[in-house]
Length: 262
Ligand SMILES: Nc1ncnc2c1ncn2[C@@H]1O[C@H](COP(=O)(O)O)[C@@H](OP(=O)(O)O)[C@H]1O
Ligand SMILES: CCc1ccc(OS(=O)(=O)O)cc1
Image 1 (cartoon, rainbow, N blue to C red):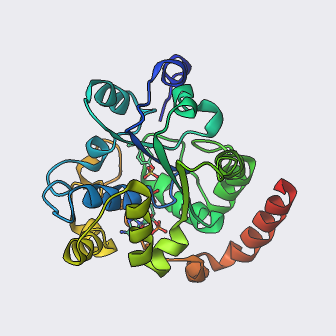
Image 2: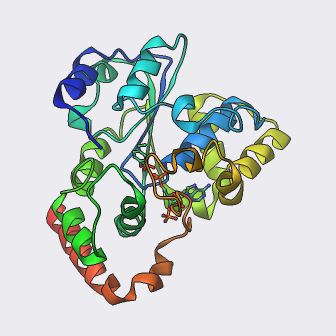
């Protein structure tokens, strides 16, 4: 995927983030689409009509894509905005705004595995030929949106700001209900118990997998291989069995990089 530098410069210098906007920030493969679906459902009070009728990339556009940028510029009122940008490339106006941002972080070992399977079926990036090769790219930061470590370190520097909420994919998996409640509280949204139940039901792995507006099936052919899927497993590190050959290597090397990173 190409992000021309003039476009990125325009996004960084000229895009105005409004105080009422809500930003969903992630490193790719950290559960971005799950978070977007959840927040959209919170906004619709659990009513699935919106998430079942508008593609996820239009409901909460990526500011760094040309398509998303154009949509966002034209949208009036408060916007849901998503991004994978590292902090140093993010629109400068955010840092002077009161806009709320949720940063969703995921165990880098799962991000690595998820990314490996995802980029293999994507048509718009260089494809890894093996997990070992992708592992090297990942640790070196030679992947779309750069180093996971730099991304996490950069955004974590915002952790004490009151308009910044950090969540993890793991806590979302372990206790989805409490995490959704935390998001509601952060966004100042109040849901009735049955509305909250509907948010949980309609953002579940199974519901999203079956929702053509959220599972990327609309992009098959043009951007992804026919047999590809965004909602692959939706599980945690314990399932590394599938990459047994190199899982120990991965764990050792990432732990090493992680401690280097401080
Ligand atoms: N509703 C959901 N519940 C749990 N995991 C979900 C989910 N929707 C997507 N995911 C997982 O989030 C990852 C994709 O992240 P992103 O949206 O940032 O691209 C995939 O992980 P796996 O590849 O490990 O299955 C996908 O299965
Ligand atoms: C269609 C472009 C695109 C870019 C990045 C993606 O990864 S993620 O699902 O947001 O993590 C997917 C699609």
